[in-house]
Length: 401
Image (cartoon, rainbow, N blue to C red; front, side, top):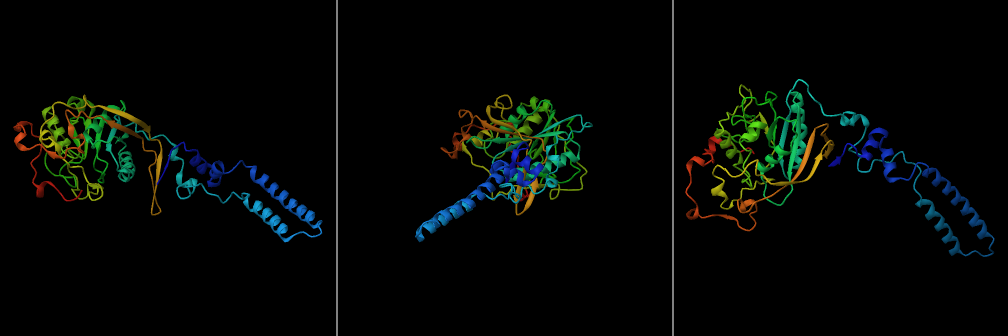
């Protein structure tokens, strides 16, 4: 895989002048060097004949002297760089950049804008260690939204600390860090690709719009499911104080968010009248055999995360931005001679360090205590606050994903 920034001087010279120019600028001396080296070679040749003539003046030149002289001249001759630079390549770029026609001028154009779309969507993608999935997701969703003439900007919220993955907190961070020109967000999984062009990412005027509805999602089909892809207006997200920050590891943060939306009396809308179903509306590119989900429960995590969280949310998330990169670059991914490009996708990568209050959520790090609090020590449950859905595995879960 090769990553190039748009302002990469080596790539720019490859595109404008061909590979030999880029190599010459990085790995060769100035252009007059080849002419100078040719002159040096001529001097060495003439010097060789002068040396031989001088040696012939001796009455008995030894064989060793002849051998040393010839070897020395030959060594210096072959060690000089060749004057032919037309055949050299862009080092490491041979397959990535072959012709300027392949790259085109579109790589250096500004992202498309659609004047007829009066809104702009921030696509928030919680992320950690799924680079191959991101390479497939970014160009797909960018082209999918462009086809719908939707103004959008991608935010890859990358968790770089050593704590357990916290999808909900990353979405809170993405909401706070996304541009003020974006008036609604898409909470989007990186491993879920929309395939049916009838799926729309329209501004959710009346309430949250669940694109990956239970009757369409390839894996989860229970009625209260709102994960995968959810569109929310900024004012609605603030109204419910975002998502809970207590969900370290995998699962249940969407179910708790559903309880917040229900409590705020926000109706959830879903797509209808589609010709596709669970098998062909989306493509789920997550392989559980390669990347196992973090389903460990430690301390009193299982007890606490079963209930509605009224302590944490958008207003309490604590984090640091390690770096923020406006990714006006494109990626060329080489795999079995297949070339995939991410061209012109407006994308911001946020490298985020989350902070954990171990007094509230000690399970953000389960390296010291793996195991749950015994049921005898757990507090009685308030059934009104339980957010864990009751699932029929045959009816509500599919094996895909």
